[in-house]
Image (cartoon, rainbow, N blue to C red; front, side, top):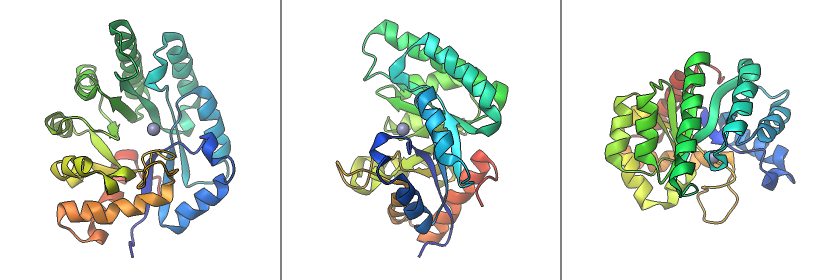
Length: 256
Ligand SMILES: [Zn+2]
């Protein structure tokens, strides 16, 4: 039995795949020991939906950002002003980042970098952490974050080279371990090499679940604990406690 509260630092509960049973999904998470979920947004519409979902539930926290797949300066500017207007209700800016699998052309990639740069400066201005997506762009993401002086960074579902990951650790960036670690030997190998001091949990619901092609939900983050404990050679309770403490030191004391 895991005694420490679990924090899901990255979930898309606004996704339409939760329309039929969202409340049950949330209750199942609380029953499984989850005491905080950060609802990330890819668009303003997502952010508005999330804020309705989180209404009257203190354990649901809000983040807002523009998914890198949009690569659109106008949309980014709209999101920047949305975040400024709503910053008091937000725990993070996310998800934002770089996705070079979606952006294959050089000009699209430079737009993504320009947009990320804007979110970095917003993060510094508002003192809000960045919840960062990177795909096929681990080096470029970390380079951009370092170049523009990002301070509070969570790399979500990171799957780049471990050398780059260690550079990020050196800069005191944090990593959230997705639930797919349960079935991914590559991911286990990577997170074995990243110090526990810089890890947090995430589901990325409805994707990246413990089972391929099955809708993921926040309660599943409990399944990552024994895997991480095994990688680090520590008891599950110690690992759960450490991951909780890491989330609190990264996001502040919002989870009780
Ligand atoms: Zn995500």
